[in-house]
Image (spheres, rainbow, N blue to C red):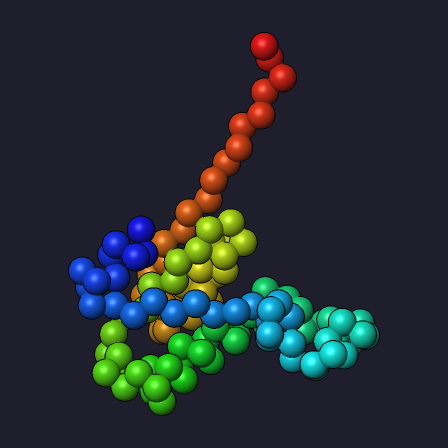
Length: 109
């Protein structure tokens, strides 16, 4: 859906990596070494990271996007983050598009 809508709105699609996953290791090889370090592995910290990323991109990297709206997309955990971004940072995120799939399991034959 994002891929179809982006060209219609001349939009940029940005994917942010959640801290502690992939190459985003805030303490390098020591990221998982202590409970103190793991204290920074939270959705609250991730939201702050995303807010800083939006600010940086709009004000330092994509200057043509300074007055552009930001819509957060996500599914499952990413969908929760998208909703929370809209709630916590309404001055940065004008909307969120959330996709959550439910699996219904039945033992009835």
